[in-house]
Image 1: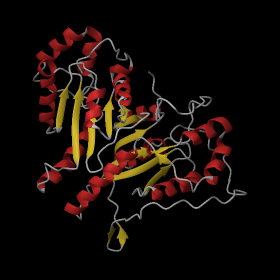
Image 2: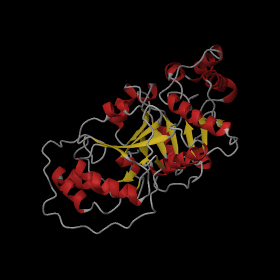
Image 3: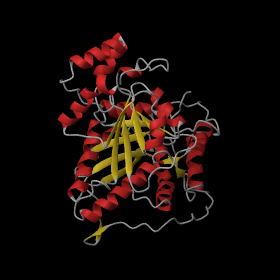
Image 4: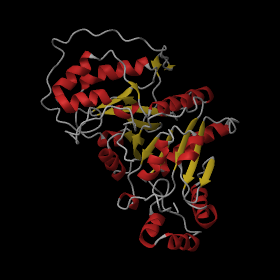
Length: 384
């Protein structure tokens, strides 16, 4: 099975690939010649209003945490919402028709995309944090990032209001790369449908992943944020995976035994686990360990006895922990993720991402490490 970002497995209209380097939400297009398309556009129906949005007010103004104090999650429009139809218009008819279409339909809200439930869960955590720490700026701050022209912003804002999302920070780049803005926002995690931009973000030291959506999504918790991580090349470096790829499973086990007390280097998502752990401790400090609205999972193909101890010792030395750790010894991850029901699962190997999606889980690919050069095969179980 082969996955395309943000496309379901079955039952979806195929999307032509006439413009592979461009998209309506995340991939760069030529916006320079776009014209004002507001003229002669018919009036659209007024959107149905969603639940009333309530922004937190402080001293007469709306409360926004400073980027340097917040946990900033940058989410592309194509993973927060479903935009396949608009993508098709863009690829088949070009930029001008695409912009005209968006303006004509700006009062029609987009449907939720693969990152939608994750963002809603972040807002649930924020609500709990504000109850316990009314003056704290240590909150999730969501930034909507899109390659779109500013004309499309009206439809995005209408959609955000319709779904009662608290997203006030926008970054509409009009075709330019968003990576510089991500750094300015002190971004802790970037989720996109554009694998190239995800790789660019990772190269700049920003935790990032390409999101995928299952055909039928499993239900996830509305009261607890659940985030699952692979180990090697996600939380940890790809050092051990390189041994496996070069020398096989036996050498991998031998390497792990010999280096049991030597810490693994950090991987691209270590920092995101750190900030989740920091927020968890704020709940623990108020007596909410057992009902903490954040729960984290390590889901790794490593074996517990033969290679798992090094992973656990590394996390402990870093002062980090996951609420649950599953060492699967090469068994498929999909069935475990179906039980966990995470809002997002991060893995560096598309083989495992596909397995998660098959089970209805929301999965994100971290294109980092040696596995990108030597894809995992179903007939072989790595120790990671």
